[in-house]
Image 1 (cartoon, rainbow, N blue to C red):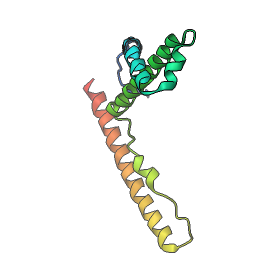
Image 2: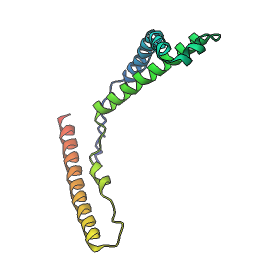
Image 3: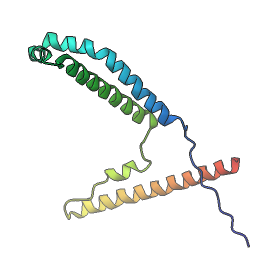
Image 4: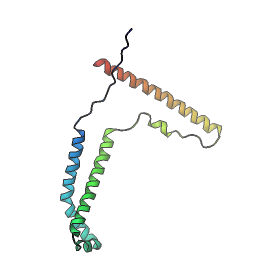
Length: 142
């Protein structure tokens, strides 16, 4: 009697994604480098305290570097948020976390909690069966 082991399905990802991310970080740095002087000019027009800092030794360079870093951080933050939204990182079992245990010993609350929990367990079992069936279908296609 032989035992057949099924190969685990691994989702293929692009091996160049880290390189693309690094390239985008560098591009954002270049953008920030060229936009920073105009941001410093706008800040000098609106805030008089920055103008006194510009008179110090290396003051303009330091403020420009700080502005470039701030712009780069904002660009990277927006990029990461957009990638997170686009990737759809939600869980199948997200609703399970929304069920709160009753805080009091009220029988109605306890009964409602257990009924919600049972519904969630049934839903979870159904989703697991669907995922397993989908995985089997994909393995048969190969």
